[in-house]
Amino acid sequence: MVLIIFSLIFYAWGEPVYIFLMLLTAAVNYTAGLIIGKYQGKKGDTAATAAAVVYDLLMLGIFKYSGFIVENINALFSCSIPVPDIRLPIGISFYTFQTISYIIDCHWEKVKPQKSFRNFLLFLSLFPQLVAGPIVRYSTIEKEIESRKIELRDISYGLNRVALGLGKKVLIANQLSIIADNFLGNISNSTMFGAWYGAIAYGLQIFFDFSGYSDIAIGLGRIFGFHFDENFNHPFICKDITEFWQRWHISLSTFFRDYVLYIPIFGKRRKYGGLFLVWLCTGIWHGASWNFIIWGLYYGLFVFIEMKIGKKNIKKIPVVIRHIYSKLVIFIGFGIFYFENLGKLATFFKTISGFGKNGFIAVQDRISLINNMYLLIIAVICCFPIINSIKTISDKHFVSKAVISSAAAVASALILVVTSIMLVDATTNPFLYFRF
Image (cartoon, rainbow, N blue to C red; front, top):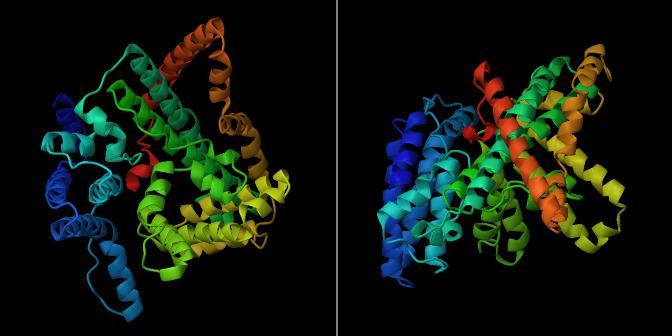
């Protein structure tokens, strides 16, 4: 009960009004779960499932997409419908998907409906992952909601993970954001090199920002006895786009894989119809803007191409070429993700293609690259599974394990001190996925 109270206080601190929306969502889905359990396999089960999912999607649609929809209706039909100005509730994209997965899993009899509203509210409002994920499924923490055991090693692991996440955000992501905003934020004055430089910096920024928050969420969860699934698995070491999305934002990609991909509305071609539906939904989920839809379908196209080529044929392509191809696609994708203004997005494409008005490279590009060389090198190195490799090797020997554990504790303490000092005078720089 203490964890529920503090989770609600945590959410209310940022959302003093919309906390009632979250509580209403909890009540609706909790009730639907009970009805599903009572009428399992009957019409009441299907009706409750459909009603709950429609409610969840309707709330998400009203608060996240109503303005976007009205704007496009006005533009398409030359109307003048007032555009609703509705502030997006923090975390609604994440907790809505959590409730949908819970309802569908109850319907599919993968989990038993939670009979205690208190326990269900704990699942939905658990503060470490409430506002920016990862999307935690009920099945993942079902047993730990009822009963969990917290050991000293869990607290130690959790604190180290929190420190790692905070370091990613403050020491790396925030610094990369300066580069990204300097070059992409002023894309009309950027050179070809500057546009690519900015896109790469922005891609790395998003990775360290979002994976940093996921580290903090996983670490805090472990401290309280919950074992959340990993949300990132070193995505930049991928050799193709399909593998990238098996490593990036895993909780979202697996959600769409399990609940949308094989939806039976496309008949015999549901494999490809479901694929493009998934990527359309992935783009829409990220924001009410055309660039996100383009971004989603852009990735869907490359995944489709890779499916048609086939895994065996892709593996025949030299690894170096596969790495170059995947990174080009990925960082162009981050450029699409950055520009909500389609005019600026067109300028970005023109500039990275070498048809911009400012040439290939400028003096300020070289200066920025030299000044940020150490930051970029550290960021690239940290994209590799170095920590995992060190841990695997050290676990084989007791002495080395003790040394590495002590070094990790010291490093974590140092990161906490340095990041705390840096945050004292810092301006507001929230995690990027707070806005989704």
